[in-house]
Length: 200
Ligand code: IMP
Image (cartoon, rainbow, N blue to C red; front, side):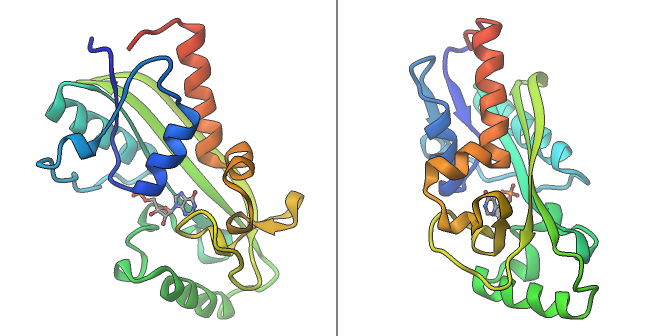
């Protein structure tokens, strides 16, 4: 086994959130910036966890490193859980304000009493074709009446978190990490690494 952990994502916002919760006091963290020649894999899985595995296996095989990869997205109940695994590709990868506009447009056609939504994060750590750790977590909330806030990324401005009475984009990074799907998944990984004394 190598003694580094490679973060298998090209999303710079995810890298920041992951690095914040996985300090490299345990082991050195590398990112795909160290491997500019590797193109991302096609995300052909049917579920978050299939896509997380696919990315972890792919980047681990390509680099020989142990890889932590995650697949995440927003499920809106009134839209039959769309955009789900297609969150980043939703509406042909248009800008987020444009994605929000289409979502609010679609919601107008549906049952307006159903406001619930959740972010999902499936996380896999792989060494070659071997899974070392897997977990999946969610944060439950609602679609905001309108986008609000400028922190975070992606769909954060339209995800209202009732216990804080704010959207995720109105929260400081530490507060989002406390309750978010990705924060929960990374804390589970940290616990696994410390409990098993796993030196990657
Ligand atoms: P992936 O890179 O295929 O996993 O795509 C994940 C997509 O889901 C992101 O590009 C965002 O659109 C959305 N997403 C995942 N996590 C978050 C989050 O914490 N906040 C806002 N949007 C998120």
